[in-house]
Image 1 (cartoon, chains in turn red, blue):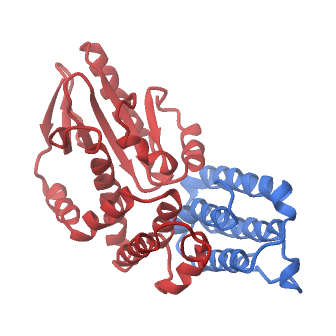
Image 2 (cartoon, one colour; image 1 turned 45 degrees about the vertical axis):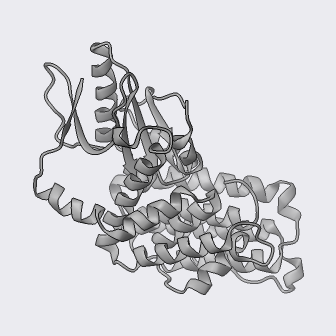
Length: 226
Length: 111
């Protein structure tokens, strides 16, 4: 098993520009240090229609109400960043949101692993197996404990292609006596992810799900993979 | 019936159960819109069922009879109103999951 940079095709060049948008890094950093309530705020605002910040504050009294106990300044920063994402328009916001989930995953992983081992847009190659066309969003290329991550904004992004790609990589690694943990990271509630997964016939028993409620587990040292 | 939330005759009489009932109606409206994506018909209805079951579970439980505070009423009303602004069926499917998360958070129960 070995890792390789993805080809710099047209899609990669365009998407690299999205990934390099400072708003992606800023949002991912804020969300990486957010509470579950703040992450739900980010999801709602980035997915919403309204651009009125006061309206959103009143929609989230646990964050902005008089009795809120959290970090008001941090919640305000998440609200501002999320409104900036929503302001990009439908097509671009979809790409930005996806890039944020990838960047968020990479940042959380870098808290429990050597940041140099956290890579983006990588292929995983196995002897005698044709390479997958699509690279993995994030890989953790640590000796003896490699992992591959596919990142989704919503549960609806879970599909047969994604599940097959992850499971194929896991099983090919196993065939080579290598350990490869495979994980779906979804910026959506676990309940929605389970509904989506339950309807899938593609193999996913060996794929770990990290939903909105479990994102911090990505940063937890010693967390078992796969 | 999308966006049909109304304040109870007396704000003091609005219960968490009533708020969640309005959220269930809003989920139904989102599902109706999302169903227009034919390939996702089953997912949309499974998703609606999963979340309305959760909302109903809370509404029928001990929290359901509690009188809602003014911030809770306003938060749920605004969340439902936000959902009613959705016109794109793809976005509606995303909101089928998002709306109940926002509503449950607003009334202080786990998603």
